[in-house]
Image 1 (cartoon, rainbow, N blue to C red):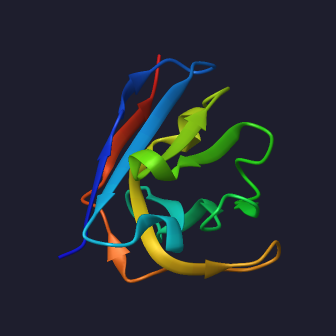
Image 2: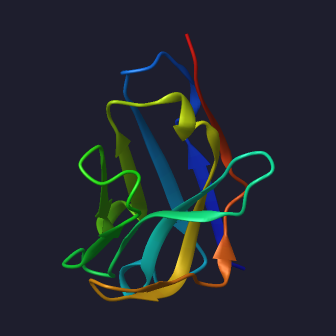
Length: 123
């Protein structure tokens, strides 16, 4: 059974930083593209960032380019999302996703989802 467990969310002031982590189990982690998505109240779930299985290709949502960085450590079955210069509009539940596909131009979400972690940006 595939399991993705996120951590690292919380409350942060505008301009601050957070790092999210997602640990995967039950899948061959190093063979899977991974991604982060978010969903704010009343809005559709949207792509934040995605990374290919070996980390060579990354894709970011337009609203986070230049502020967020996705990375992975396949030895630890973990994908990270470093979030800098956070804004109130970044407030959302952030979900880890696995098993999708991506190129530099396109991302398709996979079938595996974590339970989500809340990120709140507020003064």
